[in-house]
Length: 153
Image (cartoon, rainbow, N blue to C red; front, top):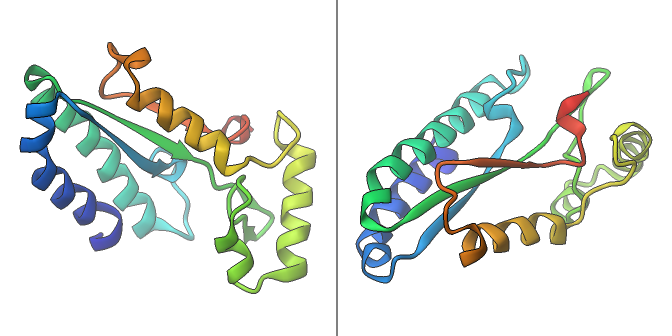
């Protein structure tokens, strides 16, 4: 809860006065597990669900002050009895030392994700840039799932 929820809440409250003056916006990273329960990661699911609701609620509070708040969810998919490290290739996954297991999971994901590829950091970054830009000036309190359709299956 400290890492996944309290950090978001605390940082938002610290920056809100500055964002009100600059008419800035907030884009938070969440997880599809905030919307889809998983028996192996229940505390994480609860924390991410709370982040999602916080983003929606704070969007209502800050909207009249000219501040937009949105969030981007990344997907994690359970494969057999082994949790996938996500549908994104990152250095974090390699640092876990998962090696062959990781490559097997990523290969499986490439075969099963509707878009038939593993996501790149740029895929997430492009959505964040959009939400932070004036091109999304009438969007607030919304979630965009960036997972190549992984959460649909």
